Length: 423
Image (cartoon, rainbow, N blue to C red; front, side, top):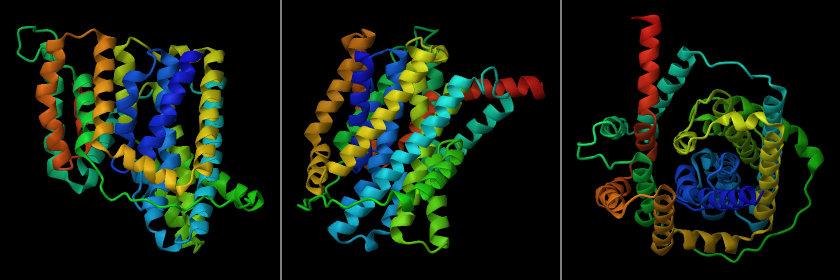
């Protein structure tokens, strides 16, 4: 139980940072704290889901408070900022989106609990063509990320080549890159992004929280509807939460609903989508977004499988842990004033914070895997310059993750498809 509590606490911190701090995306927020999490199946899974859930809770608040969305699915909030200029309006938006996020999380967790405990999908296997389709969709999304097709394609291919080389080097020990490890490389790249990507546009404000009574009778139906819609979008690889956010925002704008309803629709939908996205991984072992790929690589590297979720006690513990974390996120979101958000953002966007977190992450990974000093030094010398270039030219981390971690399963899946249907 202590491991679960520790993992949950780290997940809450990670979720707040990745959602609230400009320039720290969900992928980075999750990965930099991963070495600190107890290396047990349930704590690792709990941490990963809580971290992603928190980024959705606080992403809209970053946009409302300092006009920079904390993650991609909160961009619709930017379109409505002109309607939230007074402290009272801002807090009303924070309050409504927070309650919507909480209802969406509960809605998705009920679905997850039913799937886990009923055995509804037990024994099913994802067809190889469906798996290949998911991987193909992920590659297409990766290439088109931020509309930088050429850069993303080059980065994807280079990282894929390194991944293949790592597999070969693990067999042929005489190759010069025998010491290369993709997870350590990613930890160095991700953690140093905190140092290289500094946002200087965050200021201060002394606006206090304004308490307002919440009208649940008005909102329980919209909350339920947008939670349901978001759950459907959650099964879409990589883009589920973002598409859910834009789709519900567009629908409410088309229906000429007020600004509060529009931002609440988008934030409610993306919270249910981000949780539902874990079902394909838990049931079929197929990751459908970048965070799940990182989680799966680390999880399997430690020799774990998802069979621990066959036990009812673990199923209940997981759902309760996630539910409590959702409540904690809600309480923090509703009780923290604007000044505190500003101070947190300034602290997280300091180079000293990035150096400390990066050093802790590398040291924890070093200790956990008993690597030699030469091993760590080789990776630092190799990947610190690469990390700097990634930050300097604002390269998306998604092709880096896909190339490093998904090359092997993609190649294996393609070979299986060829062997079954063509060869």
